[in-house]
Length: 481
Ligand code: SF4
Image (cartoon, rainbow, N blue to C red):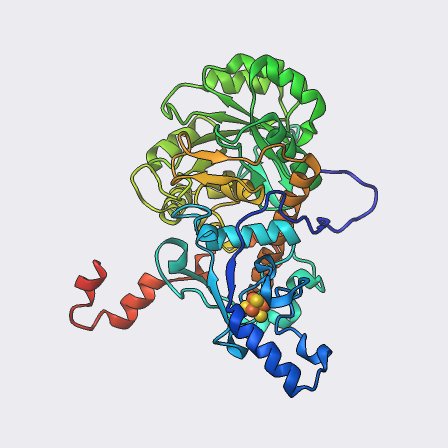
């Protein structure tokens, strides 16, 4: 989107941006003080008063490096490596802090909150030095594995940049052929593409989190990372705010019935979204025509829940080429299916109609970790609209289980500093892109556009288990297949 005279490799500046609001510590550190006193006395005698040796600490992270050492531990420094308990099992107990484990909700669990908050804080990829300790299968995204090829690995070195890997994606209309008249002029629809350097945009925040500060953070972070922020526009209020925002990154979200708001815009948006979620069968062609006549170069996207394939094809027939499909925040569609199946269905609908390359599919809902991005693209999305991860990066608290897009309650920290919020979102965007580059590098792919719909790059637990166990009596019953 930015135009320069010389080539510049895309890069997001990351800066450590610690939490703004103190969150509960990850671990509780309990020290048996009488035991510690006894140990110190015995060491003073044993080491003949060598106080340097006596006061050396077993924690390299500084948990016991306060003024009175282990008598007043500092659990905020503890990373849970357990070295101290291995060395002094009778003296130190390290347990997970229950308050910390309550962050998030039943889908965006505290483990995901920890990962997103680390990414937004440091701008670095969370690395588990002791190896992966999570599950190797399960429900939802956990039942899908990506398939890497070791053979191509040495030539494509993801984030280290020895060979460039593109994460640019295109949004817009891509007709599969052009028609020319006798004068060589194009008479059919022309390609209209908006390219952004990362396969994610920022989705509009839910009502409970929305504020002018949050809008500004989203718009400015989107501008600095050269992506887009979807933002509801609201009549007169909008015309006041828009003067201060980097409008080139804003995608106005227009609800059916609010058509007149488009007149208040005061700038030409690169893309607009029409929200037809309340009535996917409504006739909104007049609105499309009015936007097209006012902003002929603007990409028009339609926002609706993952819908039945026939309706998607009907929308295609009336000229819709960019679809923003959403599930709830737990990745469930209206019929309860998980977003993985919903994306696949939408993608295959257009593949079977022979029109997949003409449309752009943007998806949101249930994509809450960096690894979900390549999985969603493999399943069929062109790009992702990030929702709850942005809120978690800004330290939002979930009030109860937050699945429903309209009724979920998120409590944003009060007095969010603008620069802090922008940098947290930049850090998150940079680390998610880095993790995508790692995956693309490991697969030997030079650009993310080639990953879309590449289902051969994925394995599904249910398929592998079926192959392995189908012959075994009782398998189908137990698997509920
Ligand atoms: S568990 Fe590791 S980080 Fe935590 S206090 Fe013990 S040594 Fe330090």
